[in-house]
Image (tube, rainbow, N blue to C red; front, side):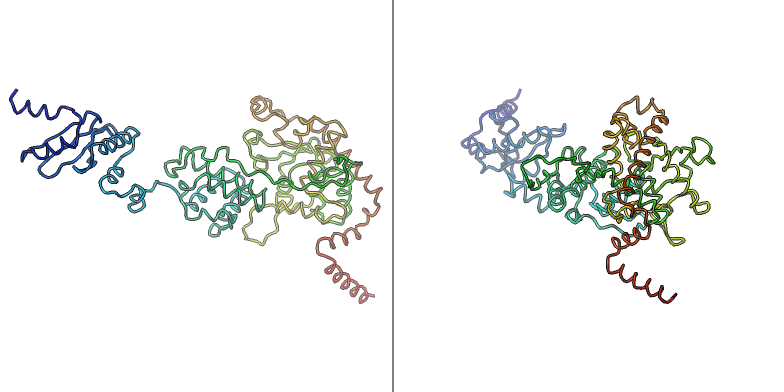
Length: 522
C-alpha cells in the first residue's frame, strides 16, 4: 500500500469531529482533493471539504436506497450537526422523506410554511356533491324508490323524476359544499350532527344514519382509491345525548300507563274503543269509497301503509272458490314492498291471510278497479305526466284517518294496537305477533334455519291469528256504535270531517251555498 493510500484511509477512519479538527482540515486542504471526516458519535454523519464548499452530510437508507443529504455548512457546530443527522435518520426509519426537514435546516423556512406556499399534492378524492351523486346512484340501484327519495331530501340529491333538479339538503350539511370528502374529518361530521340534534333531535339521528351509510359506501374497497376515505371511518360515532324533558307530576303517586284501558299516548297505542270507532266511521259512508276501503284493509290486515296503497291485483290468491263471498284470501306482499334487511328474509314475499272484513275489502276494491289497471289505489295524474309510483301516495291512508271525529291515531298505531291488545286480550306470543307484522316472520334475526330452510309460510297459523283479530275488532266496532249511535249518521260525520279538514269558515260558506240552492229549488 502506498503512502498516499495509507493517508487517505486514516482520513476516512471514524473519529469524533470537533471544531478544532474542522479548522485544521480546512486550513490544510489540498486543492483538487476531497477531504472527509467521519464522525464516531453519529452514524452516517460526515464533514466534507472540497474546493467549492465545506459541508455536513448524512447518509441513510430511504425506501430501500442509500441516500445522502447536506444538512449544514462549516459554521454549524458538531453538536447541532449530530442532532440534525439523528433527526433525518429517524424520518427515514419511519418511511418519511426528510426533504422538507433538510430544507428547513439549510434555509430556516419552516415545514408548515413550505407546505402552505408550495402545497402538498392533493390526494385523489371526490367533492361533496360528486360523492352525494355517486352514493345516490348506488341507492337508486340497490334500494327502494322511497328510500332514494328520503336520502335525496336529506343530502340534497337529484330528484328521481327530474334529474336536472335537486332537493334542498338539510341546512347544516351545506358546510361540506366544495370540500373533498377525504378532507372532511370525523370531528366535523360529529359537530354537524350535534348542531342538527340541537334543532331537531330525531332528524339529527336520521342524518347520522344516512351519512354513516354514505361513508361506508365511500370507504368500500372497490372505490377507496378514488375517494381516499378510510374504511370504518365513522364506526361507533355517537350522537349527543338526548335532552331530558322536564317531568312534572301532579301528585306523588305513580302514573299508571293503563288506566281504564287508556294506553300511554306517547307510544301511539290506540284504545280498543278508538279502533272500533275508526272502523265504524270508515263503514258509515262518510268517507270516499277508496278511502273507506283503505282504512278497513289497514285495520284488518295490519300491514304497513305502503303495502296497503301499493297492493296489486295479482298479489291476492283465494283459498277456495273466488265466487264464495266468505272465502279467505292470501296476500303475498312482494319483497320490494317490505322493509329491506338481509336479516328479515326480505328477499322473500311476506304472506298474510285475510279473513272476514279484510277479504271483503279486497273484493270491493276489485270491483272498483279501473279496467285493466292492476293497482287497487292508482295514482291520480294527468295523462303522460311522470309520477313517483303507479299507485297513490301512502299519505292517502293518513289523510283518511286524520280527520275522523274522536279518532287520534296514525296508520302505524294499528300495528301497535294489535301487538299490545293481542298479548292481553287473546294471549298472543311475541313470535306470533312478529309473524303477522312482518318482523323477520317471527324468527330471530340471523337464524340460519329460519332464513334458508324453514320456509313454510304457516298459512293455517296465520289464519287462526287473523280470525281472532278480525272477530275481536268487529266486537269493538259494535261496542263503539252502541256507545255513540251517531257513528251511523253519515251526513253528520261528513260535516264533522269537512270542518276538521277545511275549517269552520269554509264549512259555513259551503252551508250557505247549500241553503241558497235548496231555497231556489223550492
